[in-house]
Image (tube, rainbow, N blue to C red; front, side, top):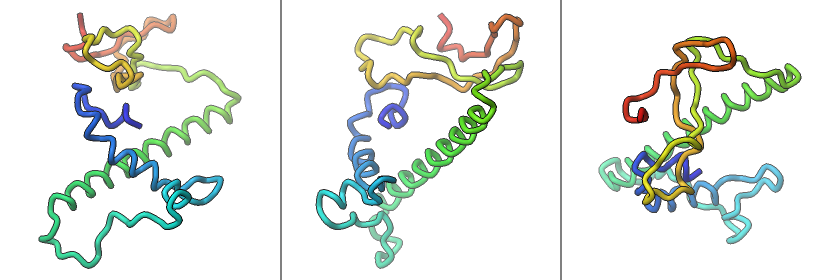
Amino acid sequence: MIRQCVEDKLKDWITKIPAIEFAINSARSKTTGYSPFFLNTGHLSRPMIWNNARSTEFVGVRVFTQCLKLALIVAHHCILAARVKQTHNTNLCRQLTLFTKRDMVYISTKIFNYPKEFPKKFIPKYEGIYKIIKDYGNSSFQIAIFQKLKR
């Protein structure tokens, strides 16, 4: 979860920890039906929505929670889309996904060289999305990458 929240510089991860911890502790387990916060304290955490506060109060908090809520919604939609694709491929008896020209793909970052001061733990596993611009026909492709990634 931290990898998805950290920005390009990989220096702001410490500021993201409270929101991630809150999200994890507030998430309900499918097995038990309760969140870790409820299991540890015996009561549910307060919702991130205030109905009794005026719109002029807590402007910074409102902006932060709206951004956090939007990020959670986007992550939820991405997870659902990935599950649909995985289920579809599983129903096809795990056939390989064939790439064609103009498909959008991710690139593995194992071959990338990052500066030594970057914490390796927070480097994303994949970079992207990039468009395939040429198919060589032997499972090799040319992709359009950003100038900053070229050596």
